[in-house]
Length: 186
Image (cartoon, rainbow, N blue to C red; front, side, top):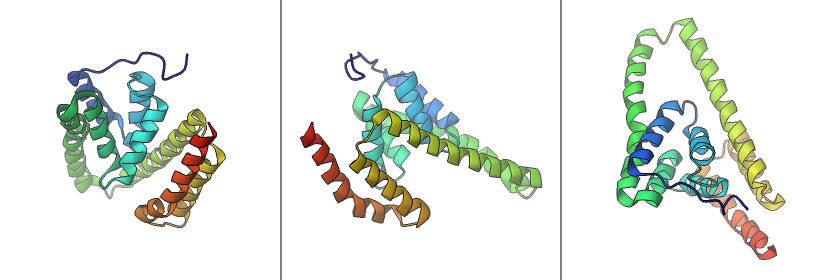
């Protein structure tokens, strides 16, 4: 039985709201890494492939990719109500928390220990994003052509600092062609 054949739970609207609230509050340093872990591994609401497709679409649409993905997941399970509940919960808790942290940072941001803590958190967040990408790549096992498109995007954006819209516009045709080639081969 494959990952897509096993019956997956369907969340209630309250489950969706509480889960995205949790994602928002534990998603320090990169909410997409936590969202994948919770939605795919813990809750099993989405497969790895469905999450990757949702996140991919969220990244090419205008606006924050985590917001776009939350809207799409919410809509998938509960229509307009879900599309409002998921991002509302995801951003509501952190908004309150960040307002408090901003006040704290304003008062103590120049203290050396606070600077060191923030630098450590930034490094951990970067590692978490890289680890999630590696985990998704291992599970999805993209064919070499699609993996090459992803690696070129990584180098373009990460090393050469090409703006993301240009990376997407420049590589989208190659990604589409590679995906079509893979689908035809199956």
